[in-house]
Image 1 (cartoon, one colour):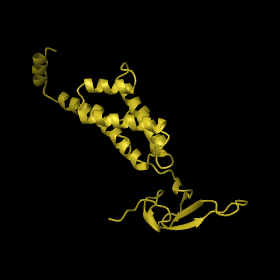
Image 2 (image 1 turned 90 degrees about the horizontal axis):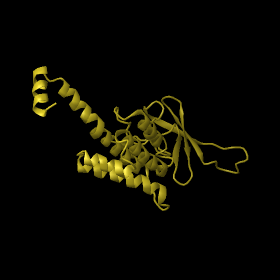
Image 3 (image 1 turned 90 degrees about the vertical axis):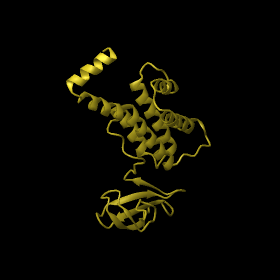
Image 4 (image 1 turned 30 degrees about the horizontal axis):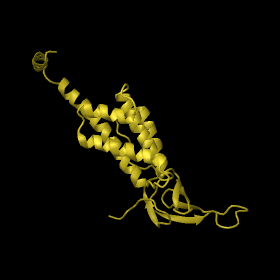
Amino acid sequence: MNDRTPEFKKAAFNCPSCEAYAAQNWRSLHFSGSGGQSGVELATCRSCGRASVWLDVEDAVMIWPVALGGPPPSEDMPAAVATIYDEARSIANLSPRSASALMRLALEALLTELYPDAGNLNDTIGAAAADGLARPIINAMDVLRFSGNASIHEISREDTPETVNALASILNLVVERLITEPKQIAAMHAQLPPGVLAQIEKRDGA
């Protein structure tokens, strides 16, 4: 299958406005007094007539509409965490380093909400490990913690939109393990017949 992702100077792609796969008419913008090429290009969709705006400086990037990086947030992601997560997605293509740092912040916000007394991010991950969270998920959170921290402190680090996409997937996976799956299990448990629930309470000394 051909890649239909929007790409600079590509003759056709999935329009970021109407989402139709359509041919694109490209033209350069010229500003008065600019002294030549402005570095700004428009791609007008032949399906809906709306334009995407591209900045052609070093690596060309679409600056309008904002291209979101990574998958949408999990439905069970807390609202405050999802706000940070979507902010990271909104700049994934414009500033991958900033987006990676925000993904780390989103993880910290999530774990602080679940373990408010644990301390810093490393300590909250430790609290999740003490709760019996599977080692692969703990490892995934450490990857996100390290990557986001390195994006802030390592001058030579070069994050990419693909880095942000991977970190976003990790965060959604953490939400699934910490929130979605326990909620689903609790809902199924609550549907057990009253007699069975009474037996379980007696067995567990509840």
